[in-house]
Image (tube, rainbow, N blue to C red):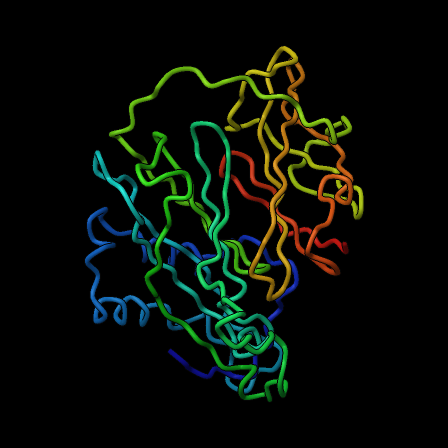
Length: 319
């Protein structure tokens, strides 16, 4: 859906998670009954999408320059699946962006689904629009071609579309719960928790070994990433999944997600950070070059941190 409101200019650097009233409304909009996601019609999608149209205070004043309609990036998925469920979980994605954003960040090569197994803290990534360059022409890169004019910059595009959450850990979804988020380059969706009531827990998990490439660091009390070639990873233990450590005590699995504009083959680095007695945060320093030898991504990248399905970022680095 396309509509034009003034001459707003989008800002696309490091937005991450959107915390606006418009975003909250969109999250509620795509929150449906569990069985509705797989049965939604094209007419229903159109109706949902129309509700993302800017209204009231969201619209900039007529002729206002330098203002934009608040962007939206939200997902909805079933809160639970039926016992014995296999295959892809149907879901919905709501987006609202400016014409400038559409030019700056093309959708297909920059969407990455992040699925976290809430039993063991492991996470995996999937890019739904990967192009086989041996068989298909490489699509135009973001920010290629003429830059949008003032009218195009100020236009607003919005809509709701279906997508699927693939069973990245196995067709039978082998855990009692999973968390799903979607990264759209420098935009981060809300997280959806999906329960699997039919899962039978086989027993205690094996102990994990703290990552040898991580140098212990003193936590500063703020979850996220900092630094450049050597990155400091800090994670809150509030709600984090703790595992037994082979070195005694407990440890927390965390994942550093690395994305680059238009690079469909995103990367991730799995870390295990030891937990100190009484600590509220864990922290460690990691040399990206040492942890990721022969990395295919070079140049400016964005890093996200995933701790038990809670994702923070992005943090800009140059590799």
